[in-house]
Length: 151
Image 1: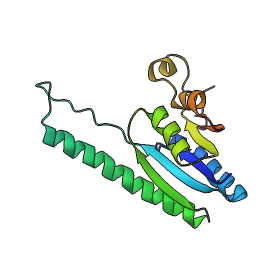
Image 2 (image 1 turned 90 degrees about the horizontal axis):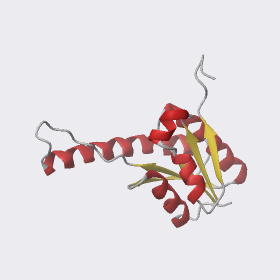
Image 3 (image 1 turned 90 degrees about the vertical axis):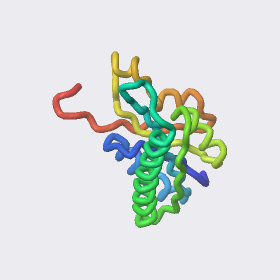
């Protein structure tokens, strides 16, 4: 395996997946491609529309924040001895992740899950489940730690 694609949303729930991907990359000697799908801003206004300039400013703020978090994670990976690059993606998260894995020749995808179940999973869906269904390479899903009191 030459490349592992780590899909992250930079949330605390994704940290176990980051640790797992770094460990796999170290053991296999694979390079790590870190992918983050930018969330399109949802602008609200009392009039029901937002000026393009405002939308552009919101989108740039989201991009800048994503770039900053990506640089931090790449630096962390490199400090642990793993070659890493980053991708900021757009589109439906599962589609963008699968497309990035294919175009970057990833032999495996590592993705975390928030562990939602029931109605919240039904409403929000599961990016990890959609990635598993669409990916042409193995996908490792790393669950977030359970919160105290939840079963």
